[in-house]
Image 1 (cartoon, rainbow, N blue to C red):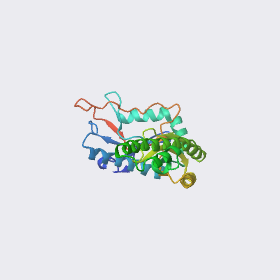
Image 2 (image 1 turned 180 degrees about the vertical axis):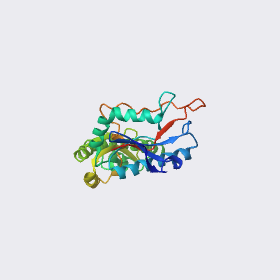
Image 3 (image 1 turned 90 degrees about the horizontal axis):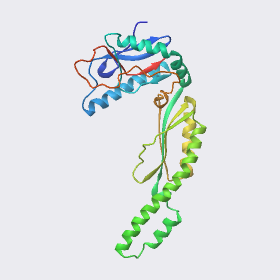
Length: 271
């Protein structure tokens, strides 16, 4: 099957086209024999352009397996990049099609839940006792008590966050099909983390997730919620049992001896 053009929507206006095999297609564009390298502002722009292609494919196809930025397939003297990609699609059609079916009409949501320390710890007995102890104390002792108070408030907020974690995860699990927790979450200053996660949900369940988060916030004024999406299912796209890895070049250092026959994924695979 010949390439099907999608227009010049790729990196730096590159022409994106679909390469199909047995009902599964990959969106790619040709690229020169040097990796994408440059100032941070260029890299940010390229990542956004990549994301735009993913979004367009998602809107058009309804279900996709998004590929991360800078996944590159290269050819050599024995096989072209396009042939290598077609062979990979042919060898993994069943696994890819199965995963695409599983993700049909599914979206990814990002949820971040934190607790505001001062509000959460306000009624803790140890914190309340320190508040009562501080008035009238000498300046030196007062500074020590303030440090102790700060730590006591944070400890109390962390205890509350531990309890809220179990409740919030249970609530979100009841309205989502899968959860991937995000470990490197930094809450705003003055807050402690409760839960940060990507959720896989059906399109029709987005409002249900919002309702659960609203209920969490309503029951505790210290709760802070960020609710982002819906997005293509980035965090759930690589779970394709039986599929081999994309035949991509994972060690790109540049250089004159690299082959010039290369393809880059600005999108993903779709039916």
